[in-house]
Length: 276
Ligand SMILES: Nc1ncnc2c1ncn2[C@@H]1O[C@H](COP(=O)(O)OP(=O)(O)OP(=O)(O)O)[C@@H](O)[C@H]1O
Ligand SMILES: [Mg+2]
Image (tube, rainbow, N blue to C red; front, side, top):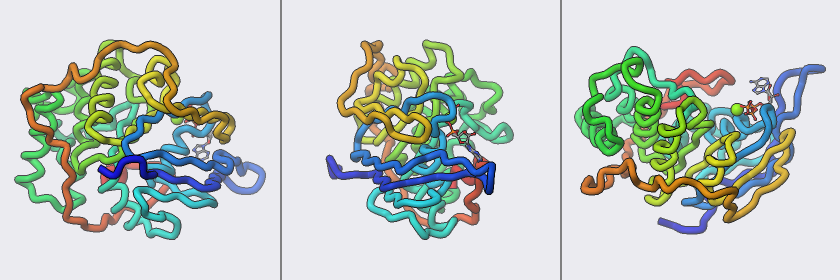
């Protein structure tokens, strides 16, 4: 791993929504660097721009002005297909509401991102099984999302985020819909992935969740008002690696075989677009 290099770089990023009188300035001259392997929490009041920032980092939306580089790739001027390519190979997404597709089994949900990278059916299924097993869901391959608990769905969505490698995991309120025990388990997983070298960026309203991060970035009205390093907001429970099956070898390896996606960039994100 190339330690201490910037995997995320935003330079004077601005984002506006709307036109004319209803035009609003949501991200304001954001300068931000995140190192490879960092664990960052983004906090701030509702409406401060956290999700907009995450969508920008996740190549789900583009800045109105400014420059954004992910893993050395300058994203300005990239086509929607090229952005989807970057998204599919560099980023894994975890959402508050899991966003698993109701019509697919857990296994197929997890395997789906690799359809867009061109991995063979057999390899996809094998890797999805490996990831689900690693996350303690080996008896849920054939279940549909609605047959799983919230915590199980979130674990499946983490497996999905890792399907293509998930170098950078973006998690927007990943524990927001969970009870405290399931939330702890999810944070233990994210902490463990951080230990394995993944870069974790999470949005939270909860200081106890932010305390897992090594760095906290606070947004207020679209401005970064504090970006502290090595911050510990409070003591947190010791959940590290409790979720992991000790004897299982790490399946968290990147896959390749690029194939451009046909998904277009747009403000409301269907899951197929996020996954491609
Ligand atoms: N697609 C959009 N079109 C117009 N306005 C938008 C759009 N997306 C976000 N906004 C506005 O941008 C501002 C920031 O929204 P954002 O979702 O980034 O906030 P947030 O910090 O994530 O809030 P929360 O904590 O409630 O999730 C809000 O005023 C919101 O209404
Ligand atoms: Mg939000």
